Length: 302
Ligand SMILES: [Zn+2]
Image (cartoon, rainbow, N blue to C red; front, side):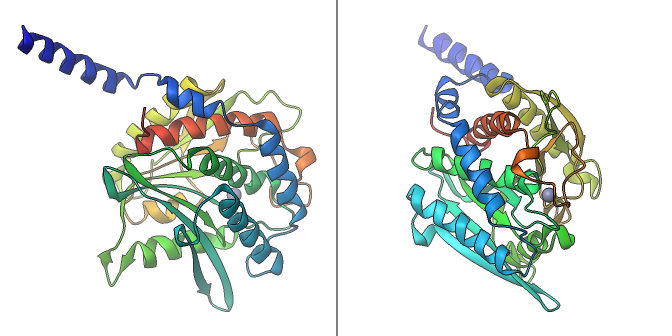
């Protein structure tokens, strides 16, 4: 009898894992996200100006992000500045590490760039930046089995400089892997088109480069789509991963996925990429999907 019960319980739990069940405690944490906090992040991000890599505005944006993490209660030793240079251009990424309980040496990376060009970049990529901040705030005291690195990249707009430096020279040193990465979850340009009905998000799947990690990307992208429909009101569709920081990781064989707006705004990289032209409700909803998905990928306590 005992044996049968154990077997039954085992098969039930296997089914649950495969079906990627809804988890109420994940939803409860998703529900802690406040639209007002997304709004104030986006407005503050706009005020920081045009964050061209190498500029004072870019440095100030990095300081602003760092101050946020400190205000959430992250300690100085969880926060690292990661300087890089390309030719005469110098800038820094910001990395925040939260240790996992079961696999402390295996990392889920959630990332997005904070640099902009020609405008304040509220959609591209204040949207992803503000979601990462709120996600880190809400999950600060939630234990996860895997470690998490929240990485804010600079130099994206000039050619993925910050992420390339990190993937090539921090993850690897002298051709030896230093950081074991479970997966990379990138957020870029998730501000939507103001005035449109933004009810869908693209989940980006690795369809290029080395084919050996494409199947793994397809799998986690499916999981990302499921998380989106479980924990947010949005619909999910897939598109190929391209032109953002996850590509630096893809080139090193990492497993990648990410969010990108479905209805594509033509304002990024212009002076009109502002708060007024961003669909706050859409950012808020993608924030919900992100908090659900990150708990799923890092296996948060239930
Ligand atoms: Zn971008």
